[in-house]
View 1 (cartoon, one colour):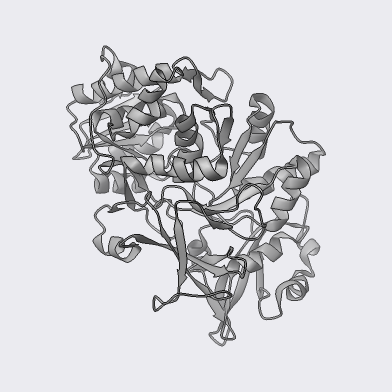
View 2: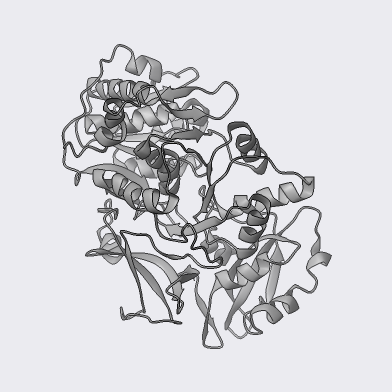
Length: 511
């Protein structure tokens, strides 16, 4: 059997009779739909166009494409041709794009017209790019319109390859610094479908799914593309910024059965509905969360509204999707659950020794979706990918029941009075306070040079400083006197990556 992922995710559906089934729907007024058969044809034509443009196997195609049908055509077209697509975060700055394009040495770039103002200065004059393709709008001088790029291209037969060949790249979200190029093989996509998609999400052909995480993000790529394509389900795409208003409208209008969110948006949506006294009706049967650990208070409120648990889990760009999760009928809020079938996890201390029940250690994971390496970063690759095991950089505590409690990133942990403090434990307590929408905690040195917790909080609409006057005493009573934040700073918002992860390193710099 052809190990090319496109053969299984797209071409297979034609032979199995799903060619006329709708695969993707653009969830906005005037949005388009595409069937599995039409996507098989258009992606094959894109593959031909790439060959006509002079690209060869293993060369790279950068994708700065919003969540729209062309994203699918280019991604799968590249795989069919043997070219390696690199979906990029569509919310970065010009200088970051310039660095990524130079680092990846992409030979062609596809850009959604809406992103041109930011992206064009980064791509013009690149020594590696052979062509700049613009999707939608009017293509400026020196570029070619996507419709002209594929004009006249005949369907291209999917190239034969091994499932262990590099298929595509993702750049890490940059929650702790500059993005890194993460290279994945063809088989990795199917591994995530056979493990999390099948055994935790339990998606079927009869489901329809909406993910607020974008397709360029590993979490969004699984939810919004590979999982539904694996089983022949239908997915909704949204090319704008997901807000409580837009997501509520999509739930009400398109009626998905599966919703994939992130903690920040879950909290904001609940606040909207509580303020307005109403929420949309949708036949949700499953909800999941990742990107940041889910606060218990948010999960409980969501279940009160919908009668559905949020299955919180943890994944990474390096592992392509979630490998530790709560599961259907086995949800314990405040934990990240247990290993997803197909993965092994363990905790180690700073010396690499196993950490037992009640201890805190770094989480290591083993599974067949692990990335090959970080492109052009040998030392970081060697520190992260240790044989079969991948270091996550996350600190966890193991409970007596075998569940894992998130404590924070390795760089986020600190000691107070000689005792390890989990920023997330304090953030959980802060998030349960009625006036607080979200919070982040970092270490800050006092006048004596000792590290103590400092909290940055975002208040709910209409709340003021007076509404959190007793906050320090509340935290002392809830989780312990030495853990309370010595300093509390009210901010309008918290710095985050485009995928919703709080960038605590920026808060540490501020502190």
